[in-house]
Length: 111
Image (cartoon, rainbow, N blue to C red; front, side, top):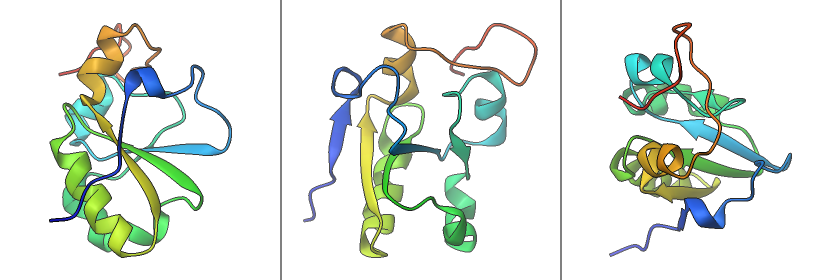
C-alpha cells in the first residue's frame, strides 16, 4: 500500500508561500461557497482530462475532509507531480481560522 504524502493545516505556512500552489478538487458548489484564495479548481471527476492544468512545482491538494484529495494525490504522484494532501481538508482550514474567499457574495464557508 502506498503512503499518501499528507500535511495538516498546522504544517502549512500562513500565508501560503509563493512557491506552493493549491489545487482544490471539490465539486463546483463546494468551491463557490468557500475556498483558499489563489487556489486552482479542478473537480476530482475532471482531473484525468484536465491534468495538463495542474501547476508545476509543489502542489497542496485540498477537498472537504481529505479523502478526495488523497485520491488525487495518489494519482497525481503516479503521474510525476510533486503533491501533498491536506489532511482534515477545508474543514480543518476553516476551523483554524485560515482565510478563505467565496464566489457567492456571502461570508466564505465550507459546505
